[in-house]
Length: 100
Image (cartoon, rainbow, N blue to C red; front, side):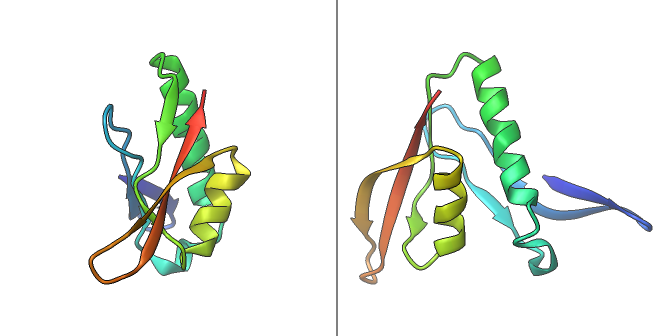
């Protein structure tokens, strides 16, 4: 759970997970907090935690091609596109990987 501290207390705005076998899903569900740097900071913390756990790589879940800000975020942190897929509706998405 991603929360921010507001005047009224802690406000949940999103979710992130670090799984052993699958990707790193991150969602900033509250649109008021998108493009504010929170996602980047959260991913930086996930990278740090993965290193502490001795992980060698981190792989994202699928990121649709039209999610340009999400793709730029992961690319800015050193992730490289490793796979391209097409979903059942014909939408293209990528998986990214970071070698730690």
